[in-house]
Length: 511
Ligand SMILES: Nc1ncnc2c1ncn2[C@@H]1O[C@H](COP(=O)(O)OP(=O)(O)OP(=O)(O)O)[C@@H](O)[C@H]1O
Ligand SMILES: [Mg+2]
Image (tube, rainbow, N blue to C red; front, side, top):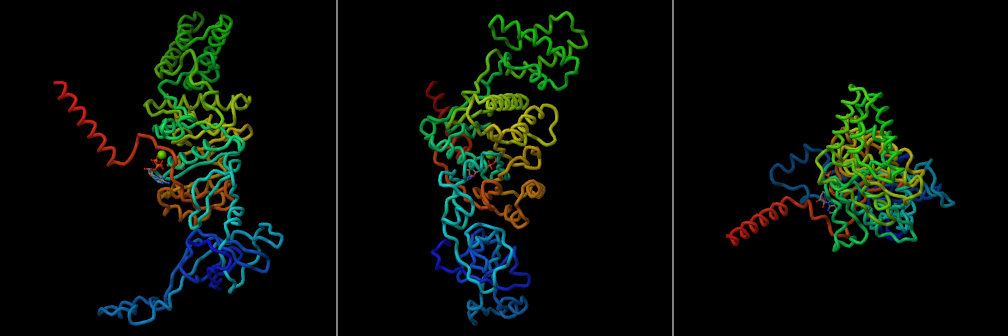
């Protein structure tokens, strides 16, 4: 499309009512080959000014006065046929000035407007890549909109801190997450391979472990229903977090009993489970009834989660392995509390193990993160939030990176979201969410916020650390086979009826 050699002029800078300024300029197009989102350059006195096309307007004097057009065309006449209207059509691209390559070829802030009459040229690929900060060994998420250039996001830029993928339901967040995972799993060892762990609420990532999918050798799915927390590894403080309603006295007594049990079992070289703890509490003669009763009630409630056992599964070293994906598949679990405890416990454990450098640097990707780090969390919703906020605040120092995926940014913890240095924003139409994104995301202006509503599925805007300037990207196609779950309404309905029919045939054959 637009990217051509240096010679292919795109147009000429024009003087308008309010421009050109240091921040904005407009140019009239030579031909209609310029597109919104495209990067352009203008030769100026100070150096090479770079701009991005924020919008495009077409005008034609013949069609300026509505009443004249209506009057003329009323009786079946056509202005277009009677007059050389096309000769009077012109198109103006409005641009945001991004920066200036000065005489030393350094990118600096632009402090003087381009002259009207200056020629506007396409930006060549190499300059575009360096302008945006793309890297040769970066993650190829797709192509830049309006350019035939791959958006290769540097790993350090994206993961050194944290990032968020935001957008309404169906805009392509999970698909993009899959692309990010593919890029990470396809990395060569010499380029650095972090471990990837994804909290998969809907079982959308289990397809990575398919033998035929291309990633089966690098991905492990952990069925949430089989996940266990070994009591020997749970400190009184951690357990107390899962019984938030316990009184301070009850928590103190619980800690006392736990510590003793722990010591004894360690000396005996035995593991113990929640049952052992319940028995100890039950048989403790010094516990007052008004403490024992509620405490037992809470421990029974924890038992009901069917999560606490003798041994922990999976071990952190199996969750976090260099260049490999671990899918924590929570799709088989209905109990929201159980999911919260899993994310809280394993999130904290991963972070701690990483701090001690027992596991490789990792990226923890959390789907539906507004449920695990809710701004206004209540009750059991509160279990995972402190852990996610902890990793968000401190993770980068230790190589523990977070990706928050959410369709409800307004409900997402502002502490966690504000620590995300890169926002990948997909289609959002809810005004509250748009406002929230505008407030929590630096480097995004009103015009861009407006563009977010018009993005199509699979189109994303990358803002922040990962790209020097906001960039629109068309997310690439997935390489691997996708999860068997999900699919279109048509295909799911068809599959269902086919399955029913074959079952009926089996029954008939049996009879
Ligand atoms: N880049 C893309 N190329 C092709 N298809 C895509 C792309 N992105 C998304 N899709 C398709 O669009 C649909 C919705 O995408 P996806 O499931 O990723 O949305 P989502 O944002 O995760 O939605 P939700 O918030 O409901 O989880 C899927 O069927 C997916 O295959
Ligand atoms: Mg999704």
